[in-house]
Amino acid sequence: MLKGTLMYLANRRPVYRLIMQHDLLRGLTQRYVAGEELADGIVVAQTLNTQGLLVSLDHLGESVTNGAEARRATAAYLDALEAIAEEQCEASISLKLTQLGLDLSHEMCVAHLRKILERARQLDTFVRIDMESSAYTQRTLDVHKELWNEGFHNVGIVLQAYLYRTAADVERAIEMGVQVRLCKGAYLEPARVAYPDKADVDANYARLMERLLIHGNHPAIATHDDRLILRSQEIVENEKISRERFDFEMLFGVRRDLQLRLVREGYRVRVYLPYGKEWYPYLVRRLAERPANIGFFVRSLVTEALAGRRNGRP
Image (cartoon, rainbow, N blue to C red):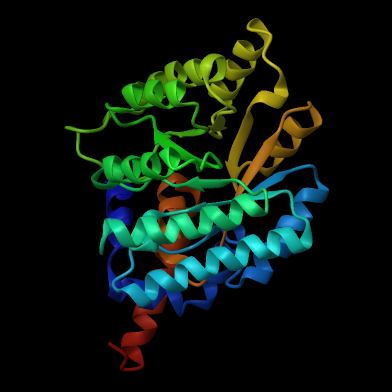
């Protein structure tokens, strides 16, 4: 119930405005977000690199409402590619197709992504297409396949283990040779499309992870779950899979101790590092996944709302 409430709030503009002005939550935001500017993301990426961690840089933002916003998002990712190359960061980029105009026009989105992939290929930088809610799954895969068939093989996808359809999507990705990041899924989905029980999600994740580790092209195992990480290590050992053939991928600010321990053990670990001014929806999804932070979040939100009423603000 609480997770569902938070996910609902992620799309409520009045709450969005309130939180964006809430100084007390800046500290919590800084735990999960590198900063509001590209320069902040690059500085944090460089620090992570010195610790042996790879980075996937994400310019925060989701669905745009007009072509100008989509062009600005495209320009932001082109700037990120240039900065990664100039500063010699060990980093890739992750992006959402709704940032590039998928809700406005398939053709617009493809054109913007093509421009990013062309420059990324010139700079030898990998691009990952993030997966959004299930309403976008097929459309996202269609855009990816269109550009893959044009010869852009420097782009991978994300597949979500909580969706029933993902087993078939994994098999298609293996057949194509596409690099997959496997995650559990962070959007609130109906039971008709996604496993409602965590145990079923975990079991499906374990099955798909094994398929990708054995048969996939450099998969990214995106989890903070100790049991799933241990299971992946067992698969790698039993199948004699090189630790260079896959990545663990984790969120910035989550299980930092585990990230560094895996690096010390010789594994490749990539940190998903978001930056940008549109941090609110991302933060709410992280809060929904981390119950320990919810109490602080709610108390701060209520305090700010009450103070606003006393001062005559709506």
